[in-house]
Image (cartoon, rainbow, N blue to C red):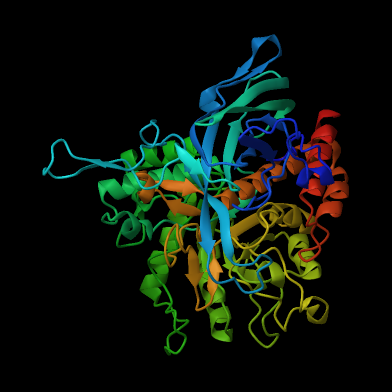
Length: 585
């Protein structure tokens, strides 16, 4: 999604339209991946698509079908292949088409940058990823009068679709550049057929002569899928649930996110704390990790020696000796298991989430001491900022290996202190939280906003966080959920708390109305994927030219969590500069 579609990469990008001479009933324009067009907005964009990508990268663009003066019925959209010099091809199975579904923002998210209304977000695939066939439209018929209705198809589908006069229907197209294809220029044509005629849009893809790795270099944790059972009407951990869960895991991997490791594949804890390594489960786990290119391995917290969530209990930080021994054995065996399989480098225990009391800080120390005694190399992740909530509370610095502050809680000086002592820092976002009063630079940042993640904000906010992470030396990204329970999937995708947080914790739409037993991606997720791919450029350039070469470019785009660019063109230009610097080495 990086190359700015010959969107002639200037302010023209927001104003260019098809030549006046081409006043057919069908209007086609191209948009880049960080743009949105509203249903009744005057069409804008470019008259051709020009994108660029590395090998093993997914690059996206949008095509807007506009009904100029009369209603249209679109019957097909195709981009069969992209053909390069010498006959090299990017085949159609590497090109995925989606119709963008408009979803409703009924009440604004706090501090929203955009007003309530309809926004394109959900991406309805032209081809059902489960069956490999087009999604059939809803239909009812009778064989004979008086007989029961025969119902086929689905409420939500990609084609055919209607576009009323003066309205737009945007389409999303992903191009996955295969490994091994020659660098160079590839060309193709998007063809749209309607009941009022046909229209075409030329596509040019430049393949850069370097490759991205299969899995994410940027560490990440994006929650699990416990809630999907009820959405799909299946029993948790049933065979049907496992099939759906597997499709969600595959979708995460497709977007450079580490899927959660299914518990059914992990070693089993025995009553004495030791592990049973079942050969079949182990081989299935290895296959899962290799197939989905998992790069971060979360070791589940010990089922032994757990502390109560409530600190009103008199024994809130006491682990009985027998439970402690079992927990030690558990972590010792688990670390040996991951180490023997080459998974130890990025293994961690998600120790505690937001310890917001002095008692919770004491619990961090107790729990981490068990982990570190059992396996000194095993890292403990705590979702907490790099400075104390209250200086009078216990010092948890010896216990934490991976700090994970909210974006608005980040403080450069204390982040640097943790990095210098050998700790890692990840970052995360949730809801709409500004800096706390105990932030070391509170007066400076108190009224500033980081790039919160919600539908009623520009899409750029999903792409830029990896750039800002790089600015601070932060090497991981955490998000609480991709499938948070919302008020009404597809029609009011808001997490209420009690205010609406539109799209908060919700990056996948359930495929139920499309007849898909799995997830449907969002435009926000695609932009997050692009940010993860950008980070791979940072790593490649640093290896070839040093950290300073990367820093010079990142400084322009993301100086701070509150001072990042709001200009998509600047980000696209910076990405091209990164690619040029990689190619020059």
